[in-house]
Length: 166
Figure 1 (cartoon, rainbow, N blue to C red):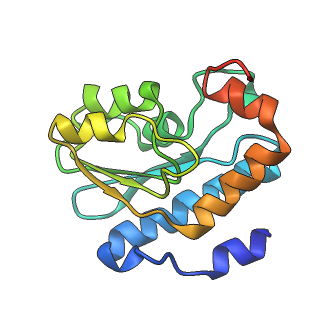
Figure 2: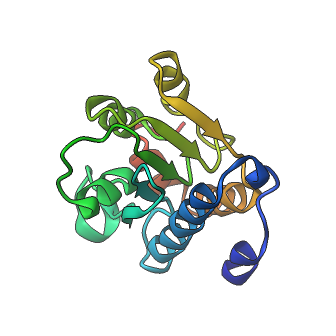
């Protein structure tokens, strides 16, 4: 499945600029790396206003035994200190949880590109209400990756989103 995921083009990717498409590809590569490491396959990239990738990362909760090591925080940390975050874009393969949505809000990240929000809908609507520009792509590759993971690892999934398994 890994090779198939990288080969396809996102159906709504045409609405993204070249930098956002590159950011989504980087985030998807990170998600697949997380999967290969035995973790939760969510990836992210933080883009500068000019589209340059400042940092990229993936969910490392399992790998590091750290419940705060989400993909968005990993990409944010990899970007290092910035004078400000106005004009930046967070690209993530999955709708950000409340924790990661708070990071976007706290640091004034201007845009959010969400690979998919079908398997999990976090705080992206809240961020949009607060003035963050939000684009939900619903990339089939991101949906397939998370759907497969949730089916194969439901206990880990519910742990990741902070809920008890029904």
